[in-house]
Amino acid sequence: MNKKTKNIVVTVLMAVLFIGFFLWNIAKEQTEFSDSERRALATFPKVTLEDIVSGEFMKEFEDFTLDQFPVRDGFRSIKAFFSRYVFLNKDNNDVIIEGNHISKLEYPLKEDMLSHAAERFNFIYDKFIRESGAKVYFSVVPDKNMFIAEKGGYLALDYAELVSSMREKMGFAEYIDIIPMLSEEDYYFTDSHWRQENITDVASHIATSMGAVFSDEFTVNTVETPFYGTYYGQAALPVAPDTMKYLTNPAIDFCTVKSYETGKPVEVSVYNMENAKGKDPYEMFLSGNQALLTVENKLSSNGKELVIFRDSFGSSLTPLLIQSYSKITVVDIRYINSAVIGNMVDFENADVLFIYSSLLLNNSLGLK
Image 1 (tube, rainbow, N blue to C red):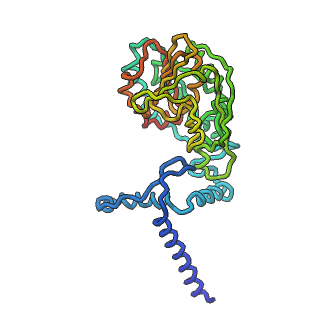
Image 2 (image 1 turned 60 degrees about the horizontal axis):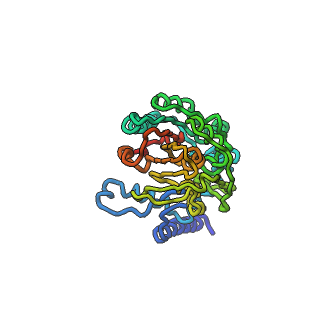
Image 3 (image 1 turned 60 degrees about the vertical axis):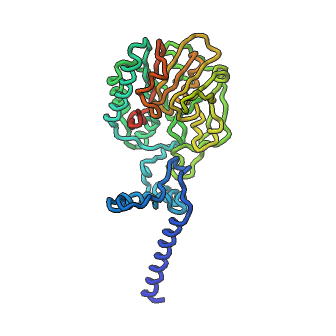
């Protein structure tokens, strides 16, 4: 075979390959959600003259082809392998592996995001809490990059500056410092969240700082299903899953939890074991993202009430505090507008805790 014929054969084969993949991409059933990446995938865009003229159609079509590419997860794994082990890149699309931990880099510190979060918290305080007689506290949960990023030579947030800035902006609240009690081992290897079984000292410090009584006597239970956290899919590399554990005591076992997702109270569980087998097992804690929950401790007669404003880190912390209060109200202002909270939450003489992760504070536009 002469050189010209060889070039023709190679060109034809490449054309067949590209056209074949294109037709396969168009013909195959669209995947709406990526379990490995925990996100919705782009689907074929609606064709309108306006979108074609503006260029929006081609942008959405490009997203569609990237998200719906045949055997996409396989190609993602190949790319991640070559990026890490052949080209020796330190990260793959900001996803890093340091020791046993997978994480996504969070940098730089966004002062405007901190200001937005503080503005929401100040609004809630001024409108609903200031005249209620409530005692107000706040705490910052550092993401695990605080403990692994700089050690691996990666850029990391200035966590001291983050805390200092939030303390200045939230002068109405007493700061409870939990950072000295945390280390990288308190977080899942494949996920951003902390391990509930490792934060009883954190819960104790928070409770006692608010003047509540706390006992660290818990029963440790293990979820049989392996836990592949959010970062597992983003890393696209074969790593061992985490083991998820959860803690119980009599106060947890006999409490009543009600969700107000539908506007009416619906009884739910402290630990949703169906969610433990689902796409995001961490949502077993208080059934995941809930706008408003109430927890009543049937074993307590102390009359103490706590209102927690939280993100997902508060889902696994809250059960540990049930023993310390007669009632806990849990609010997530990512899913409920701050302006209507006064219609549903009674702050009179309660303890109020704002506890948020550095990840959310640094990306706070979702707070309503």
